[in-house]
Image (cartoon, rainbow, N blue to C red):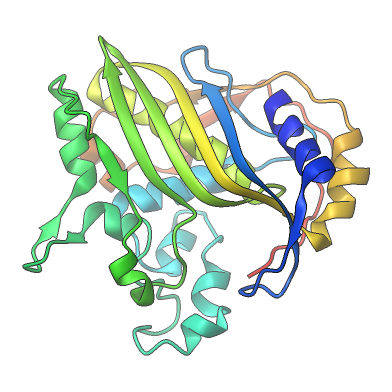
Length: 283
């Protein structure tokens, strides 16, 4: 919580106003933020200065790992976050590549599980990484990236948190995640939960200890219509201790994640928080 609140305060104190053409709403912005999450000691990074809902964030991560391309698929597993970008984003609605209601196109998990080689054959980035790590291999390229500039016009949104690099030192697994853009009041809570869970989950199915997850953000911002709530409400609150996370130990393979795992296989313990804050979301 300390590093999260320090970033929020830094944006309030040092941020520069930037016009955002996509949303039409100005952002108070800083460049370069670095956070880390102690997965080894199970300090689960849920926000405590407002009520946070972790299961939707985990459900979204599961959808990415399965390569989902439809907001309906995400809704089915308990995540509504793609409804707006799939169905209310005017640029995507006008895009001839959109296949109809709920279609997200070739975004996020589609790229992770079905990257297209020049000859059109698929490349499953995630399976390559999992297979290597299971065999104790770190080729210094254990990378899963959703960032495919050649196919931006085939999806409803460019990826924000776009690349995950796994590093194996002995029997300890680390994760470094890169994010080009972050809506700090709303999106960061999802993002930091997903970094933590991704490392914990991959460590579990590949038979390694989890170390730390490192989260690097290029453009961290607070939208103008969120600023008052952040400055005058959330930043005035004292944080509580971090909760812990339990993952179902029966999850042992990528196939398990693809087939039967749900958000209910993840449980948070000892979570204390302040009242919810309803931040506006800019599409």
